[in-house]
Image (cartoon, rainbow over all chains, first blue to last red; front, side, top):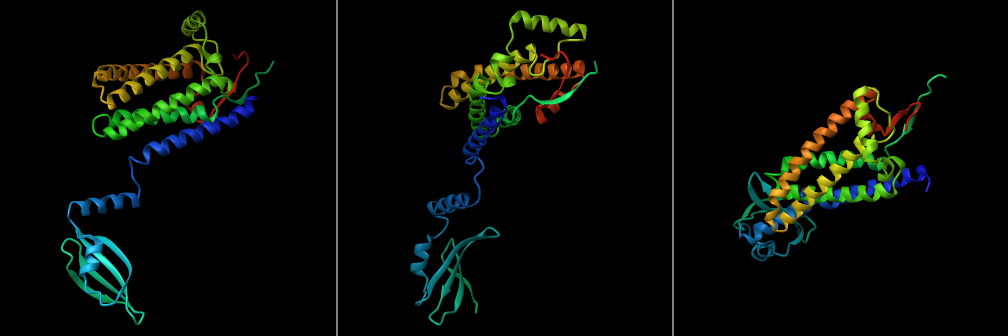
Length: 110
Length: 176
């Protein structure tokens, strides 16, 4: 192999360095979503929050359909935020204290 | 005859990125040794992989990367070291004989440090003394490496740090 060709092949070895770094260090600094999932699992297993399924069973949804459910950290207070669709096609947002499962205020959007 | 100088590529992309990756990982390994064991361990694996790639590249790589090109006989190396006193040592495009052996010493020392560290991580705490001794030795070798780089840069009036960044050196008459 010519020296010029080998200089090209050296980039393949550079790519291997990159692949090794990506594999080894992605676990040390977890990015974004995987981090959140781990946290939610810990909160559930520790009994710090009511599981979403239990909340949905308990909340009086009166035929409302769940469009979206989010768990938010509002200044240290964990809150479930539900987007619900009623039969007239309107979207409602309902908030629940994640620790107790009790409803907070209700907001309706168009 | 006028002296003709030209830029010539001596350090390929892998050699340069390998070199500076080792520098970063090494500094990181010292910084994380006490407080961040997980990161420290991952850096150890990373260094071992870097060394493995360097070993392969030293057998099949570009001219200046190959061990067979830059490892010179002890006699040759001693005469190079003696010529430093004259202030006009032979100029090498790649590693000079002393630098070449220093590369080997650092590679072996780092491999031993990383390997003993991995044994410790696996629960064999008996390797801790060796791990720390090799880590200390690596500091000494790196200090000598830096002194050698400085000395050779001054004697040959060339910036070897810049050469390891750009990959290029100026070819001179009577280069080896």
